[in-house]
Length: 299
Length: 116
Image (tube, rainbow over all chains, first blue to last red; front, side, top):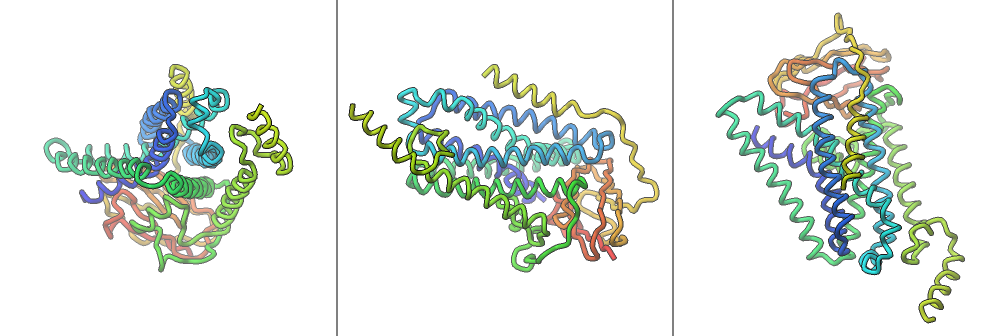
């Protein structure tokens, strides 16, 4: 039982930890201070408030709300978070090298103001969504065992939080010990997979609320990795894996990864720094722009 | 930072402004699954396939439970001493596994809905 408490706290916090840990390590590695960090931690604080509010609604209002309401709120939150993740990955790609230099030159300010809100929103949604379930889980166990009986449980909770903190420390250490390039690649892949997991979970909510139909299962890989087990559950929460996917889930995978890779390919054509809006500029103009920039720098 | 908080407050207000009309749950006569601190009864429940089926999930335990079924795409919190109603829309014949996710390491916390 206590092992389960530790595991659940760690698992429920891993998603938020990944998102916030990567953003934090990335901003820090880029020497970003002030505005960006304030937005990140502001988002975490807002996420905690959101988690508490959602937990309260789930515990006290389920019979009063239309049954689909919570599903729709959750689906909207997850789709928004997935969109913010895609946007964040593109932004990190566009500014991977230049952010620190741009900030020192003060160039970054105008471009970034709106992006900081993306950081705020992503942190808030990551904490708020999983946080609400963790809060319910913990309050449930504590209220079930009053008084001194709760002490071992508090110990397990502390261990769960320590496991989460260790994950955080590992993320921050990996920024220092991995090459920047490797850290960037790994974190990018993890963020993209999280975005896929969020999109798939959003579809689950829409099926559960009746907007999308319950479709027949296409194949079954639960013999290989069962998404109902501990490991399979963790993998599915971090990547969108499903052991018995239906048409809707498979379409979501295809749609998400074609959108993601399409956007990244498009962005790859654009390698002129500090031109975050040149995502949609055709390749031939980029050479002209680059030459113009070189001429300007020489002048 | 101030505007940060203002945005957050706005968002929370939006979330909280849920429709407040009571939603009578027509639970009478529906099949019931009971969750009690990691024990599900019955662990196996039969429903007709190809029809819309509603099932009451009741939590008689002291801790909150979470009804989760990846096969049915449902993940819902069941508050202690509370109940929810889940809806299966035209399930194809087959077995749909579910679990109380908060106690998933216990064998008694796993169940299956059979549609036929």
